[in-house]
Image (tube, rainbow over all chains, first blue to last red; front, side, top):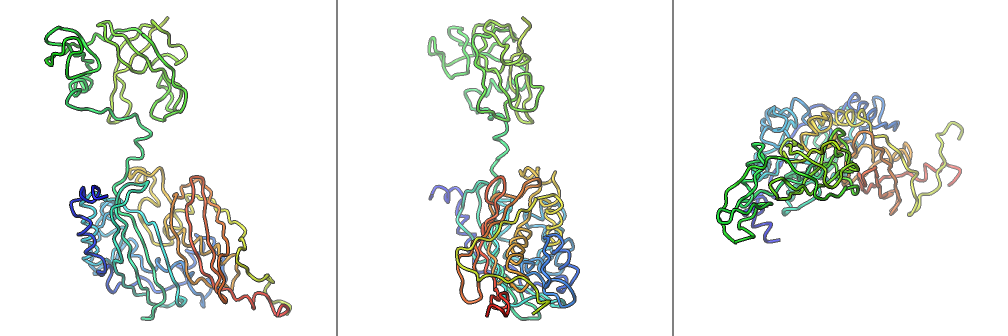
Length: 335
Length: 147
């Protein structure tokens, strides 16, 4: 708990300082309450409530927030640049998307969160109370305060902070509704990674191996003392304990020493052994004995998983499994 | 009174279950809801942008969910019903091709104010949980004959 906060370097204390500060001052609805916007809303929602049609229409109460939205043109002249806001910034056109009527304080709070890596935003809660109906012709004004900023929270989406604002919406100066809105500003968890191959863990002891893979070389460690080859990479020699080593590039030939076929559970990142299909399927995990004498675990590709056999000759190739990862795998030979 | 609007409604009681409302989550609904609520966030209309931000597809915005929950309640309680409070929390996103089923249970009645707990479930899980307070003119809805 304290660890989480410590990792943010006192950010939470700085975020909390914004509680109670103005989020929107003297916002003005871009359009008075009008039949056309009400009709568009009702069409989208499939709402046929008779009270929402005709010149005497009231607006659907749940439209409350819609009257305060800046739309594409934004709330010009009211702290005009929304581009600092995470969502707008992602759109690349300052002020375009959110049309923010937000205060300098709110923009600062957002910038703090963005700066801490919490660049994504999702709305999580909306609590509205309707005090009087909005009628065609009503002019909308609104003010909002930053009600609270949560401690750092980790959700399925990622880690971040909840920011709650409370808005008073007025019609012709009269309080018509309150609107409490909560967003999560978060750093996205890389959920898509679960559909990918696990990332290799590269450290000081094995980075030479992965440097080799990038250059399409399969490098085997060789003890500088006793010349015994070893794989996987280790800091010291299992035979003599010496720590000095150099490398030998594998010729890329070997045989299947043993194997298993992975059926279940399916993982999207592991495609069928022929890698033709993009779908998950059974795949062969081979223990390959290289002609140099060391063994390594990798996929056997190019033959159906159920046709892999012990003793099958295989040849090294490098398989790009996604944008970030290339792996040494072994193609099964005929026979 | 001939010509008076139907329905003669039985009194509302705590524990009443509202008939479910099934809503197909189409791209059209997501986009038209976003635009009708003047929400131009790209994740509500641009699939490629949504994917770039780690979402599998576009998804429904909170204002549309709010509108649908409100509609569900007033559809059930009739044209005289007036929403007083709608409080919702979002969970599993509504992606195109999914179906959301809204259900509601009356939890509390105080005078004309009926409180309903609403849950909207899609294929992933609970999209929305919420509490709605709606003013229901029960005497009027029951018609003169019932008084």
